Length: 76
Length: 379
Ligand SMILES: Cc1cc2nc3c(=O)[nH]c(=O)nc-3n(C[C@H](O)[C@H](O)[C@H](O)COP(=O)(O)OP(=O)(O)OC[C@H]3O[C@@H](n4cnc5c(N)ncnc54)[C@H](O)[C@@H]3O)c2cc1C
Image (cartoon, rainbow over all chains, first blue to last red; front, side):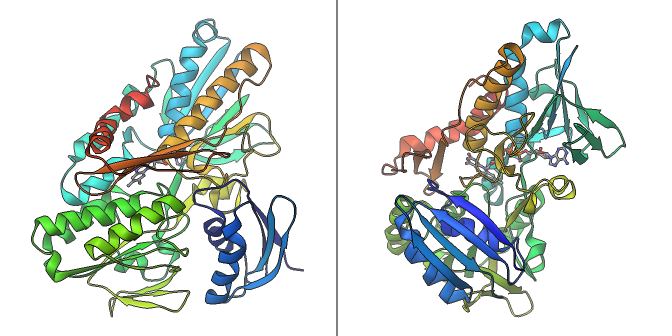
């Protein structure tokens, strides 16, 4: 079973959700996941672009009323 | 019955908290109802922002340090005896010398540290200014530098979000002054898709770099440094050659945090308004070592420390919480050797920096001196 780490970056302007995600991925094993919560509109675009560049898997991206929830699997 | 407050870490936030508590709890300290103890790693207290100037020979090393016991209120006994284990269950901290210190309230203020060794080749191939030894070596390398490719490489996570931009523009000014800029190419790399975490700062920095001809590479997360062929390679698949590599290495929290199983990477899961360790009401966490997703900076540490002082005082004297932390961060930004600007924000208000002015630059230089007043709790 893969583990999932939750990173609540809602209301975070600096260093911001993507940087929090990058830092969190350093702390988990390949195959494990990060659930990233963000209120920043840019995150929903930036995170998939970055995952694609690096080769991590974007498992899901959901938009609820006031925030985005993205699940990323560390792939390398 | 004495209420024992133990502060682990004698850096900026630990010191502000200790001194603030002494002012608020003078009567209780005198009557022996409260005792405050601090443990740290060194007899001296270092003014970290001063490290930024060391590579350029613009800050005397002796000015970086003060005697920690002189910065600290004399009512707080200070022991150079680092914590090796924090046990929240038994409410005790074990130290390097083998002592076991019991507490009623614990303040964890152990900061963050650079871990260049976590990236292959980085410790051997790169320069940095985030500790004194590194800043000295970078000063020597800059002295000997005669032109070539400089890469300023930023890694996540790191403290002081503005230092990478500051060092880049200061390098540009320094090399221009030495007449070396026409033989030099500076490339700045950043982990995310813009030049700075703060969007308005990134928007300001990009045209500024374009104007002076500083190159940049975004979405650059360091995979490996190859000192033998002087290249740096990113996870994203880009390789850059360098003659001099200046890095902001990735950071972790203190070893005692991971050794005590208090948080992955040394970052303690912390309630973002109460500043208590998640799941504890007797452990406060302050400064760089929290896992709160905001800037790891001196101003964050300062504003958080003020909240911890108020709440600890109220809990001890009135058994109630006094104040929430609102996420406030304030940063001066050096935008060259003679210019500066500032930015502030909190959990609810986005940042919006003004244009750089000479005046703000002088204010930052003054702040460099005012730090000690702030640590003493006088600001
Ligand atoms: C080059 C540079 C430039 C900077 N510029 C700025 C700036 O312009 N503006 C700004 O706001 N911030 C700046 N900062 C950041 C700022 O210095 C830190 O964010 C701030 O010091 C954090 O305070 P702290 O109390 O959390 O940690 P620190 O001040 O780092 O204190 C942590 C203390 O804990 C001690 N410790 C660690 N482990 C143990 C242990 N096991 N037992 C006991 N003690 C322990 C350490 O020795 C240290 O004294 C800069 C930092 C650097 C390196």
